Length: 408
Image (cartoon, rainbow, N blue to C red; front, side, top):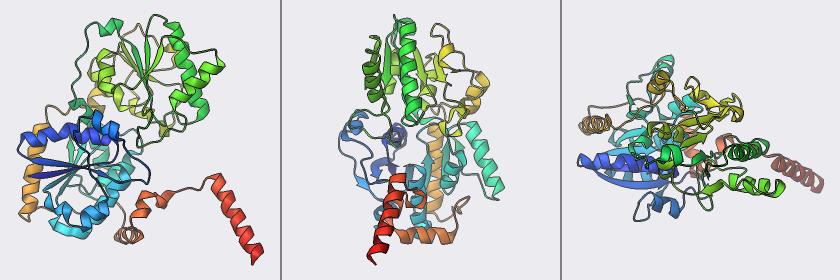
């Protein structure tokens, strides 16, 4: 079996990196490719090297990959792409027809927001590997509502849990408290400034504890979501306005698994890293000061028992996750991944024999698909279908129309 692993951003590439050895274990060869999904940089060479890739990974476009026929040289496509690139992939694969490879879609992290939007874009996958039982049930409910078949769904788990974390000795008591930033949660300046000020206040409450602040992407690194107000800049602001920050606070660029291995406590707002910390046995707290906004994804953790506002964070207490929530909302894929690979091989073999097919489901009409293909690559890269003009651009367009009218 030949497998092509497609990814777009850092966590997406890390996901297929963790899954790839299991395909190789069962005799498959695997190639990696980065899918061009926006005009600006998606991932840096440094990020690729940190994951252990010894050579550059080629960048492709969905259009070229499909129209050239290169994609048909593979038996399986392991797709870990954001929603629009996934939609783009299936628009082109529909043009190829039954000769296309089997497609497996997998998520790079928790489905914190816009779950049904993401499910619908991936519903055409031959196999959809989902994170947890809750996602399976939600996906099948969606398919049933549209009168479509949801049997492509498989209970896989959280792929990042394939990277096993060994805890350092005495980390429970002597390790640092680690805060993991998210790029756009919270999003706005006053919220993010408050976050930094409260982290400083917490560090002052626990002067004997070291606090490590892990930025989502520092320096030249890139992510799917681009931070409006980087946390390192906000710490500089607070340092200038408050005569410095506590001496026990430090910024770090170490990888999450390394930080989790030595942390005495994990702090974040709503992030997949919380699950990684919980499974590693690290006391974990979700910061709840920013409210019940759907866009922030904290609703995923309702019922977990680990939400706290800054005033109620107790680093001496061991946070206990509600076991029923953990069972429904998370899963370690290690016990099932070998069977999942063999299941994929079986379905790919049936496709090659002409006896396996899957209809489109829960996505847009044939007319829309043709229209989107006619708009071309730039349409997808620019997200033109849902772009909103900034106030500055609106004013510029308004002035342009006035000037054109006066010159006429």
